[in-house]
Image (cartoon, rainbow, N blue to C red):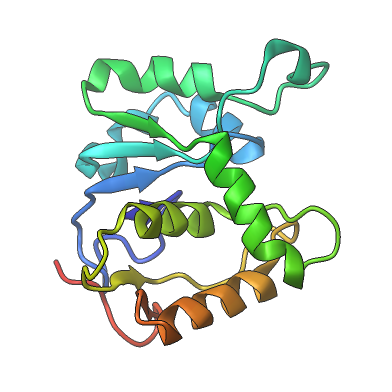
Length: 173
């Protein structure tokens, strides 16, 4: 599983891309959609499936300035024939509930947090821990990075997750 522009792709972290999670709201997606060579990027070509972390906004919430690019990226990815998964609003609500005790206001979980939470929710009881590689707890300042880090530490202590920071260990090829 890789995220957005996938730092380290084809370097220390190898070139396998089972799922590529692409943030489907905001300026990053708009930038990708304006790139007529987006589908030709090695990272995108290598992806076996895609994950969009945000459910599609109703039209009335996407004005005056569009922020949700879900329909556009679905149309762009459709000809690839690869699956596209969109994370549910229920998962977002669960993520906010988990982060709320450590975050003032309404938390805005990161793509990495949401996808990791989805993996943990789908994990069978007694299954081995989810292996998370390269999650660095930084990026857009609107995410509650300290709260997310604390949650990851708790999940690791409970044996449900093992965090491999990007600097310490590359993921298996």
